[in-house]
Picture: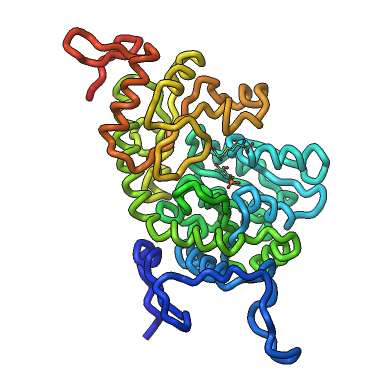
Length: 403
Ligand SMILES: Cc1ncc(COP(=O)(O)O)c(C=O)c1O
Ligand SMILES: N[C@@H](CCSC[C@H](N)C(=O)O)C(=O)O
């Protein structure tokens, strides 16, 4: 009989123990080096930079849920990108989205400024424009969908298919931090490298930094492993162990976070705010997002029309913590232009239509009514909404909340 393949929810928690004592949790091999039986009888592991059983356990689990042949756990999401760009040659041309995470933009801009790479940024929501820019010289394309923080969606399959038709050796790289393998399987859409900041949903508890890189082509996986072993950015055994523990609850966490986020997006939308969330029918690429993902995730952003007003809202919540990052069990609020995306200079932010008043909400697993109450209190305190004598909420332009 063919080996049984399980649904992702089962795969996340199922453990077929190979441990000598049949431990129900994968053991932690907190060891830098491994003794060999003899010079002619070497074991599978010699040194943790090159490989460690706890990392192997995590990577095998990740391969199953990312539908990859091989995955690699490294020290952060940015660490993933650092490994990936090392696959390129000096001066190579690459295409990147114009709303990539601020840190991704920073590293690509740095490499561009040194002449290590030639980086061209385009609006990835414009599929035809992007296709027209891909040439035989394009060696890599960096995509995110939905993007952080403008929640822009791109047609991953159309772009990837076209890119491979123009140049079969071109590598399409997809940062899936916002969706996780639970809501999107980029390798199934044809991308060559799928990576994620595991600091976010995969771990889910904000107690480690980590990143995971996934590939299907064994030759490509070999090149990725070479860089990781050579540079020493493999994830430490204890962090691998913590990440493997966090992963077990990924499905329940993401489901609850997403349910909460849908409610909050509707609450803000009904108050008349411009809300960016791919789960709302008002999102310009709602249909496209639904066609390539099985959910909308738990990050939304919205505009208030005034930087001062946004600042007051952000500083008036109790449950929502003012912090960067997302994907954790607790809810966070931030202003991307002052925080997560401050590394993109103000001129570039303006050119890319990034509203300075944008507020980002990263929703956790708390009770949704408590979260809405906390937001309502902050909106009232800041003056963004008002109560009438019947205790009904109105926004600044007089729109009555449809609660
Ligand atoms: C979409 C996205 N990709 C990559 C990263 C980088 O991940 P890390 O912070 O784990 O380096 C982040 C956030 O930091 C992110 O939001
Ligand atoms: N000071 C940090 C900011 C990290 S932002 C983390 C996360 N990706 C987010 O979007 O919130 C830096 O300079 O990288």
